Image 1 (tube, rainbow, N blue to C red):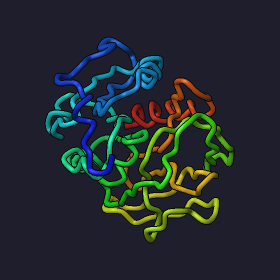
Image 2: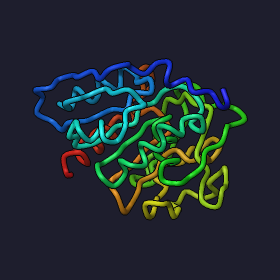
Image 3: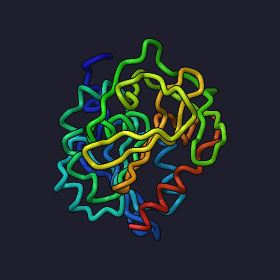
Length: 224
């Protein structure tokens, strides 16, 4: 999978508009292979959703006048998607951004962090992740083969503390950590409205411990 751009094979060719008359925030999703359960969670929260090709330029995305941009999950190596990363970089700081799985990796690379290939990918529905904001352990669904390097380039986070990175867009703070192998499972940017998680809070199928993260995203979108 290393070096393979698989997202382009599953991304739509033209924008898909869903629930244009909904009452919630307008969310543009860069569709690198979005799960139906993610779409359903956003629609259940009254989002006016536009699924756009993952190659969409920043100008094309901003022309949709989004309240927030969502970076979808999807297959492939994030290091093979520098053309998408460059576009995301132009959106950070202009509009709230949130990413899941591959979207998490793309956001991190867009702000100057690095990713690496895991020796053994995270697969399945019973991975314990600690939410450092609430202190709760969430049982999560995961399906990825790459992860984000921690501060100083470490592959594993030693302590359950919200360690920080300095990025091209200010400070990033660790928000979630994997309790199996101590890899980065989520972070929040503190100087611009952006956040991401490595696992699948929509968990379809799987546990629903972390579905509340969609509420956080919609609140972030509505606040800006």
